[in-house]
Image 1: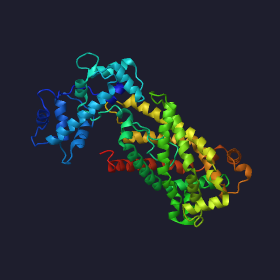
Image 2: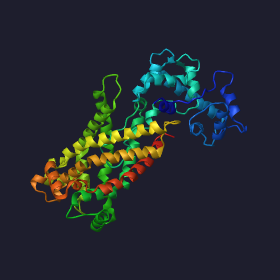
Image 3: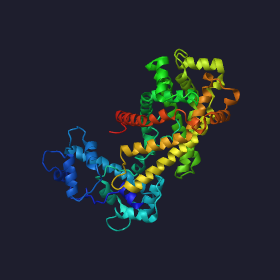
Length: 477
């Protein structure tokens, strides 16, 4: 475990002392080997290495990118000086947050406590080993100067980055609305950064769902109309839909699907924060099982609030050309012909489906994360885009496998208006018995092929849009 934590958080170097005779100007002059008045990535990397200062892969590039305000590919002295001073301020805030007893030193117990608050349990011996890598004078305590020397040229100034890279983020939108919500740090909550991330996630979800809407409509079409006696292939389903309503009909119902993202995301986030407070002892850290319970309850709360929109989205998706003239017309016709109860058909299997999806999704993601950290984490906490996307895709796919039969039952229950179900097949148990009797176990997985096919493009699109939106909103540079 120590090797993992050390690789994630610490470097092995002893940085220069900013308070000694070597000032920022002296250091800048030493790094500026070609004397052109600026330090580029190559000079920074070579200069710090020559001085015996080791740092993470990509750190030099990140330092230059962060400080290069005029975008000329290097840091002049003013940019260099400003970056180091701002970075030192951040380091000091982090040091103060770790110094629990405010004695001006960090000891092993404080390191252990801080990592536990981030959800990482380590032994006292492991905390002492981490401490030793920063302890220059052998006192088994780290003061401000030792802390600053160790991290000054490490862009990762906050221990929260250990889990920030690995935050199981619901911004990887796959069109399903039952994932564990986003978690935000106290800094993000107080600074208002959380709403920007939610806005970026909502936009990413909107673009992602629009891009994969034809596959989503094919899934719903096959869930309702495909059977053992009426087999509908993916290609056959597309042909039927295009023949009935043209190419544009492949996006039928997408408008409601996009509109419900924002209210659902906001409700889920607010409910999640409240449930975490209720389930966690005052002053205690949030355990994985409490996070799962809070996430499931928040998902149920959000789904309950927007479920009528889910019904309208599915009805529009299955409706024929001219049957509904938009969302409001669909709502009026449902209300007039079937009553208010129709807006909550299929509610029970939908709520039950949240538990297996969220539980398996979270468990698989945590397992994949821990496996990667144990085997590959040596020089960086950042696993890279492909690893994060891969873990998110695999975990959400496993969650879908577990909850898909319930999703199919929900769809058929809220769409029995289109079918000739007998009364005993309009209930969840009646429907399941009928499907099992007529089509067997695999009948519960009708339409899962297009559902799986949309996962990778949905995750990829949402990730790219999310990153661009974060840049546009000033969350990241």
